[in-house]
Image 1 (cartoon, one colour):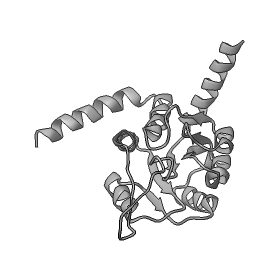
Image 2 (tube, rainbow, N blue to C red; image 1 turned 90 degrees about the vertical axis):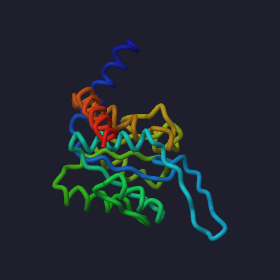
Image 3 (cartoon, rainbow, N blue to C red; image 1 turned 45 degrees about the horizontal axis):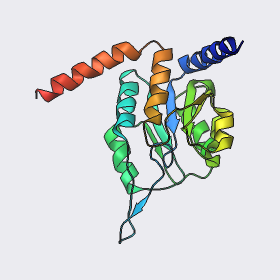
Length: 191
């Protein structure tokens, strides 16, 4: 009985993931582990995991759109988002659901085509609205409760990559993208 329920849950997760065309995420506690280093001049430094960056690259190769909606504002995040080539960056946002709706409309997507990866109660309205809500392993219990996908990895430690990998596998794109990314990496090393 338990195996049947697990298979059904995985099937339903996969069905939702197959519809995803846009992946949005929070930053602090999701794309980072939530640690902020404050320099003597007051500037903040954040750390980003390379696995998450590779996952974002693979999602872009697959033609998925990606973006960030975060409550904080950071110059370091602007630089990271530009390096990753994200389609959307929204900082200092209090009403994340309002921004979600604007992004979906701009890209002509239904909310069922949007995934959101979050970790804290500030993400709750967005996770309730999207078709594929995901929570990092160390997310707040309220976010875990609304998530359709619960990561094994904590925020800032490959959780974003994990969600992207699940979506790409559900869409049948994972194997070919991994091979293509490997070819790109090999050819760029020869330049």
